[in-house]
Image 1 (cartoon, rainbow, N blue to C red):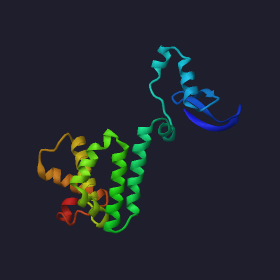
Image 2: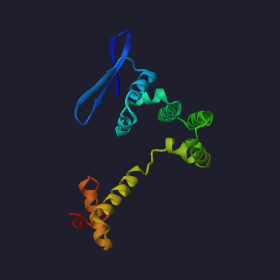
Image 3: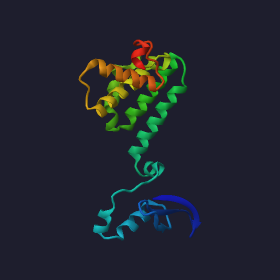
Image 4: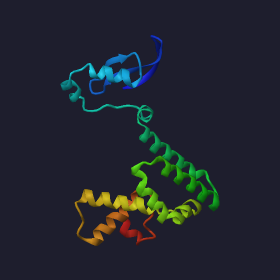
Length: 185
């Protein structure tokens, strides 16, 4: 389900309904408003409506229909703007304003986040100030977890260690620092 600019029947936008599996167009609705879509869907009996397994809608359509989702998405975007803020005081000030928006949203899903920010406020500020990150190490940890999962576990530590180092070498991370180069090859 997606809107398109059709400029027909006095409406700027129409809605196309498609079946992705069969690659066919199901119908074209004359309006894109929620009421028109609901009326259309209610024209089918309950059995047919329950047969629908997935409805795919563009994110903007969902955001317009559900205030809580829109608010959460907006808060996420605004937090991303923090990356463009420089200086300890400005970062701390931006976080304060952002947390006020979070409190004002009264979204239950963000209550734990507020507690976390109160506990870890300065480390969060420092994360935006300092050039250090454990992202590379977290990525390696993730690759190790995948290796363990596809290997169904490895009992011998040395073999496990060598597999990790080989995996690191294949992905461009040098294992010369960690061990003798001969073991990695």
